[in-house]
Length: 211
Image (cartoon, rainbow, N blue to C red):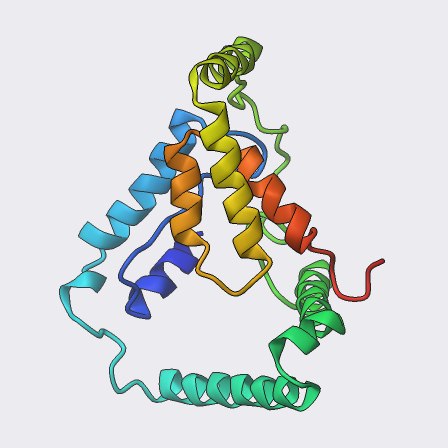
């Protein structure tokens, strides 16, 4: 994560978020959030990398990598255009397959130690599973359900139904849906109700080739 954050800064990012180490398992703990924050602060305030606008300006290797990435990107764009554009490529499963193939190659490089990840496949130590994962009190869910019930009992049901119906009707055409979504929100339609009517029009996403 530290290298990825540093790479983002060197690349001129205007905004940066570093994930907490347990974020994939649960809501991040306070300690994990602090480590993620300190990572950014050390890069920002200790390394000096942010003291110049473009610390890698003119670097031959970076320019060569840029050219390589640009060529690969243009090759992809050409292939997608030949398929009939992005929607056609998605429907054929091309984009998802390319992502999956890339992830597989990356994982095999790690498994075969052609790509070293310190602490994962080299320089490892025996560690216990993560401890102290944040657990949400089940009472929080019950509280939210209670609030939702009170909201539905106190709102103008006719207005909610009208705004949601208008959204569904517009979704069948080519209108800008954002103003209608905001109307539904102002009427206190729930996220589930809004997504439900859109799902009824557009269906659910399925990877290319899936039935």
